[in-house]
Image 1 (cartoon, helix red, strand yellow):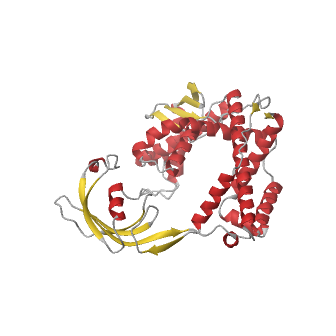
Image 2: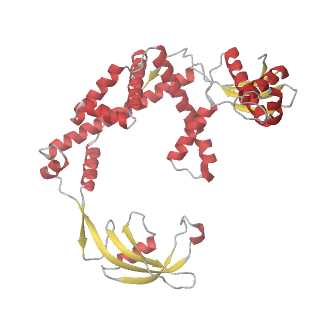
Length: 412
C-alpha cells in the first residue's frame, strides 16, 4: 500500500499521526476481501467459490467493506510502526475515521510510545541512611501483641468494662415509636463498634438484664440524616466475656514455638525487629537514591501505564466510583514515580546484565526452603502453583540492581 502519514502531535510519550490510504489501495482491499468471502458463501446459480467478484461485492457489500476497512487499518498501522521504528506501549486508538466509496481512507492514529530510557548519570549521588534503633519498649509491645493473639475470652457475671466482649440484643425505635424485635450484636466495648450512648447503656447492665432509654446519635455520625437525633433503644445484655492474657513466662514461650525460655523468645523478637528495621532503612535508602536518579535522568512515561497503576490501586483500596476522580488526582504523582522507578530498574537490569538467572532463583528457593524446613523442590512447586516465581525473580533482580547502585554511590 502507498500509505501517506503525517505526525500531527508529538507530546511526550504520545503521538497523533494522520494516516491516508489511497482509493486504489482501498478498492484492492475490497476485492481481496470479496475473493475470500466468495470461497465461503453460496450464491444460487453458481458453484461454491465460483461466483463473480462483482456479484459478491454487490450482495455482501457491507460485510466486505468492513473486512476491507479492517485490513486497510491493520496494514497502515504496521506500515507506520515499521517506517517510524516505533515501539508502542499500549493498544492504539483510531479517531476521525473517514471511509467513503471511491475515496481514500483516512484516520488519526493515537499512539503511546514505550520510552527509550537512557540513564546518563547513575553515580555520584550521596544519600543518608536513617538508622532505626530497636528499643526495649518496642520489644515489649511486640511481646504484648503476641499475648493478645493467645488471649482467652472467659465469661464473667458482672457489669461489663471497657475492653470486654459483650453479646447484646439491640433494637431501635421506628419513626412511629414502636421498638421492633432486637438483633444480636457482638461488641468490644471501647473499640468504636457502637456509638457512645449505646455503650453507656450496656455498661449499666448485668448479664440477663435489659434497659430502654433514649439515646442521642452523635453529630459526626456517618449517616448525615441521623446526626443529632434522639431515639429510643432497647438493649438486652446476653453475656459478657473478659480477655485473659497468658503470663509472660517460659510456658508461654514454648507455646509460641521452639523456645525453651521467655528470654529466648525475647531475643528472637528483638532480632526480628532489628531485621525489619534494617529492611525499612534499606528501603529508605533505595527511595532516596531513586529520587536522585529520577531527577537526573528525565524521560517521558506513557499515560496509560500511569492510569493502569492508578486503577489497580483504586480497586485494591476499594475506592468508590464517586471518589475515583479525586483519588486519581491525588495518587497520580505517586503512580508516575512508580512507573519511572520500574523503568529505571528494568533499564539497569538490561544494560548492566543484572537480571536474575535460573541459578539465582534456585539459590533463593533453597534459602527459603532451609528457613521453612522444607524440601527445595516442594517450595519451588508451591511458588510456581501460586504464580509467585515471577515475583521472586523480580525481587532478586531488584536486589542486584540496588547492590550495583550502592557500590557506585555514597551511602552515609
